Image (cartoon, rainbow, N blue to C red; front, side):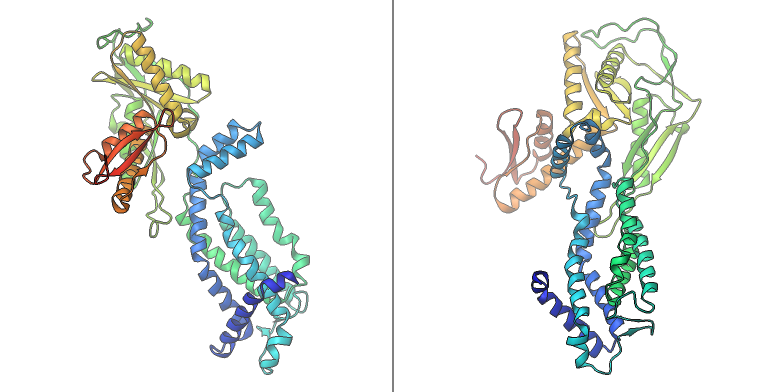
Length: 485
């Protein structure tokens, strides 16, 4: 009775809409329910868009979430805390996918009471109107009466179909099985509900199925994980047997003949707005792993051609894997500095349990160590803290040995993506500061990340940047030029 009282205003609204559709539009009562359902679903489109955004975020961050679950699989409480922290940092609402159901529950209950009182409140006003649907069922009678069970079968089939299309790929097999079984479990209960409610649910499920077909185009599907690779670099056909000497203060000279590295089995993944951009990025990554590789020998595998989306909703980047053709090889003059850096990073990766392939190349006094493989999320760490620490240690060890070159540790283009992301954050903050006239404080960053923000805005005449706070919580403040001190 309390629920009925709370939903009385909604029940009255639905009654007026049904009467308007029947009297003014001239629809039979059953078809009025169908149209009412469509109106409700159209009103819920913004909620459905939020649901799509939520599913996109969950699926695109699946590797990081699985890494957290694996890391804390022995501590469920800590696992949940870390996941909630991850959701907050990445602005993910894991409950947004439930919003359509939450909004539908009061509508369903209100329609139940509307049909329950149909004979006493509505029909007396229209004594000559029919409550039959296709001459098969009476919308006010229980589903168990007459041809009602046939309508219930249609409902179960439509519910299973819509559940299949709208199932979240982040759900476990047990969760998906539960969703598929529930419609069948509730059959005895639905037999006591008015047939009009089954019309409502069948219409809802048909709409949801259509929405699911569209969503499959808009929502990125999780891509299969790359093949597990060795933590050691590609096998060498020719290499010096002498141990690498410690890096010297000058640019190291290669010992022994040039190394010929087998490229067979080496691969690199990348994404981009178009397939062409993704191929180019993947090729660059592959060249980092196998310097000197002949580009003509590379084979591309397109995992996804991407989707432009609709008004920004459903954007999916193109996803490409570049494979070095079997049997090909490339000549690389890996210096002693590059060899030492590669071996150091490989040992660190082994120590933390990251299954990656490590390659290194020295150009113009800078040694770039590139990692590729399955466990890049573990190697990169939260906000790049782990990979930054590895890079710091590699440079510290190199300087201790008297070397002057710089070592950069990267993983599948993380540095470039992080730089682009920080630059975008800086530009958005600059626009906000300029438009509001108030300083904008960014989240705490490392010294390297703060430098990227400062560099991104140094030529912007409308704002100035300054670092405040103490490590490790030092952050950047973007200040409008007219209020900067």
